[in-house]
Amino acid sequence: MQNFVYYNPTRIHFGRGQIAALDGELPRAARVLLLAGGGSIKANGVHAQVRAALGPRPVTEFWGVEANPDYDTLMPAVDIVRREGVEWILAAGGGSVLDGAKFVAAAALFDGDPWDILASRGEAVKAALPIGSVLTLPATGSEANAASVISRRAAKEKLAFITPHVFPRFSVLDPETTFSLPARQIANGAGDAFCHVIEQYLTYPAHASVQDRFAEGVLRTLIEVAPRTLAEPADYDTRADFMWAATTALNGWISVGVPQCWATHMIGHELTALHGIDHARTLAIVLPSLLESERDARRAKLLQYAERVWDIRGGDGDARIDEAIYRTRGFYEALGIKTRLSDYGVEAGPIAAEVARRLAARGMDAFGDRGMITPAKAEQILLAAA
Ligand code: NZQ
Ligand code: ZN
Figure (cartoon, rainbow, N blue to C red):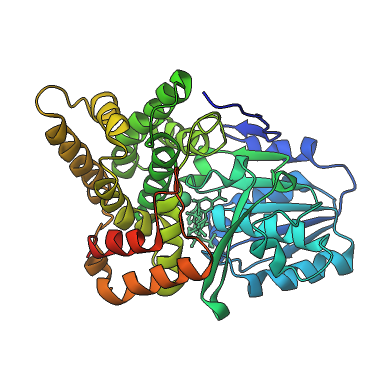
């Protein structure tokens, strides 16, 4: 196991009725900015619960944070925070609203051009306002991590930043708030969480037994509960398992002391920036192709994944790896998530070349766990995902 520092300050309130816990989490007289998306929290009653829990605190509402939250949408919220002396940011919605809150919280206290928060990948951030969240879409893990992904459509950019200053102080996870999710978003959430685990697990052996077993447990849970929660969307227990699986996939528990490879996400973000494909769907396109490309470098872990996650045993190792990659693609397809660029009307040749060009322009000459993914390899991976 590699050396590590473990730090996660987010307090979680999990279960039915937990939105009421907001009252105990926020200071009595706090000036709050409530950040929300396009209206789902109005329709499903979350907004009313939040307002009831906040009681007489002065609250300003900011609506309209879109999927893949945009820099230009969020900057007016930054102005409001500064103008009104907002002290707390409360996000109510999916990962996009939470990520937007993290950006607003950091940008409000940032000295300089707020785009440098993204350009520096978070390193330039020295402080942020406190953030709380009410999560309504299990997927990103943003409710319990220090990451945020912001798009800038005007520049065709989508970049992540990470800084411990934007860990939510608390997050409320009530599975009932997710009952209103359309099937497409449930599938996306499961597909995203699955890939998060893979990118912290499926690299090379690091003698980290707890992290491996934990990661395998989260993967197996997702494989089991994702189709079930799609089929029975109002079953509380299944949805609760799904929700917690998505949080544990990216709250830092399985990443400590192990090599990670975020190349699938890096390449996927380019597909969203260029073609607006849903985040999870970009991962479904890239992941099977990337595993195939890296099958020799990742042989030991692929064999472990085949056996422990998919129960594939016996026979030739190469055949077991073939089967594991086939089942990985099948996991996404069974959720209704297509895994080929052509399924999204995107021609592989031009986009593969453009993504390689953009990665090279950002100086990403060698990324992934051992610097094994180059722009040229990313191009091959996308060509193979045609
Ligand atoms: O805008 P509203 O009306 O709220 O509707 C949303 C949105 O249209 C809807 N929705 C959310 N909760 C709902 C609901 N509809 C009905 N009932 C509910 N309970 O779902 C749609 C998608 O929401 P969004 O927040 O965009 O989805 P998700 O949570 O998948 O977030 C995706 C974003 O997170 C980033 C992605 O890149 C993408 O921008 N990620 C953030 C990460 C992080 N912070 O650690 C890591 C991830 O890898 C990911 O990159
Ligand atoms: Zn993701």
